Image 1 (cartoon, rainbow, N blue to C red):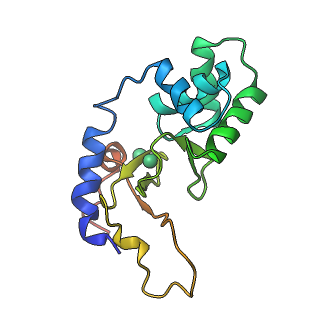
Image 2: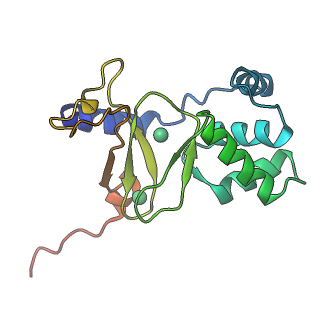
Image 3: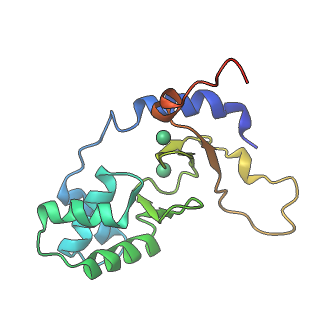
Length: 170
Ligand SMILES: [Zn+2]
Ligand SMILES: [Zn+2]
């Protein structure tokens, strides 16, 4: 398992989350679609852009973001685009217990997530660059494992701070 690295990476991940937001242009998303063999459509490009700009967003938030630049897009077009992009591996879908599905454009690196039990905030947790120790289960029952999906649960910094202090007396 990769518990050794959890704590420092968890804090680090919260602190620098999206501060280095990469400004990916529409043409890059179009290229990405073509490279994957997908037809370039305005909803697909817009959805890819929205997911990239707002990692771990749910469908409703993505619809809102997409409509910022493409007001006439239908719910169904966004659903369809999310489905297609996820199936093609351009978008990763995660669904922590008790949460609706969330989407992100960071794919293929076997990273994990930390979820706040209180407000539902989600942040990335790097597992390992290159070798991913959590893929080597002690006993994989003969399965060929290609992904380990690990969710760390706790309180985000804001919720941990807001939490009432335990009283000194019973
Ligand atoms: Zn929280
Ligand atoms: Zn993530």
